[in-house]
Image (cartoon, rainbow, N blue to C red; front, side, top):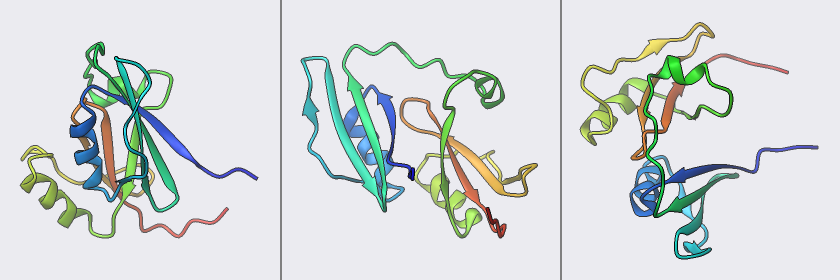
Length: 136
């Protein structure tokens, strides 16, 4: 009955965010739409998933917390992208300057491998390698 359609994200710089999320295979499916002089909206799509990006010229700064502190707040905390070879992707993220040199792949309590980076606005982005055979 239900399927995931989109996740919304608010950013300061629309162009930087479009460029960042294109690294994960997202492509614009709408041109940026100006709602008013302060707000623009664009939809990016990868496979059957849409990332709806709102960009405000007068945006309050993002409170960049540590991941653990951020997880303790109610609401959506991050977006995660699944990859086949997490170590190869981490090396690429470091080459692109998106991951600090001290970031390493960790194994989570759920059994998946992961690391975190942030987008241009400080939103957490998780990269995972999940080789579990899960069934519902």
